[in-house]
Length: 235
Ligand code: 5RP
Image (cartoon, rainbow, N blue to C red):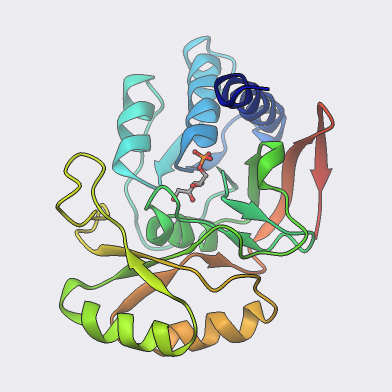
């Protein structure tokens, strides 16, 4: 299979997983909207249902890109407020292991994604077949980092064996990429992650790391396309 065919094959799987997630959405729900190409398929399909009058939902998005897409599609958006909890959040992932531990943040939205996932009663992950792994760590682990702290964060992560690389902007490769919050993104190459809880705790102690892309114990189910079928995985 050529890379182009492979990409369109994976895109079809993303669409299939997104379509399956629509069955989790009930009328009147408060929904968290994820970020990335798979989540964008879900937002488009949800928007079609909202426009057809088949579903009424209110939503908050995990990135400006997803928020703009939802707004264009007429999905009613709500601002963060005290006491707000989402019935359901649907989001993609960069890696999903059999415990439904995730690596997220390839799209740079890990901070808002973790905030919304934590404010949700149910995090449903949608993913193509390339995302399901036996062990996390092939995909570099993203961090969102305060710009002033960058040199010391790089030292601390290197000391943990994370081989950190500052992410560069896709629009201007001479500039650092920035998150929606104006922070920097650092991709860490730890290799296979054997002790994810321990690593998550260690990263949390480093001043200047606003958030890391390990999502542990947050996902309640994952819809992953495997062997051409949407499989429901649970932790
Ligand atoms: C963004 C994310 C995405 O969910 C993740 O990168 C997967 O993206 P895609 O659906 O495009 O493969 O975590 O921060």
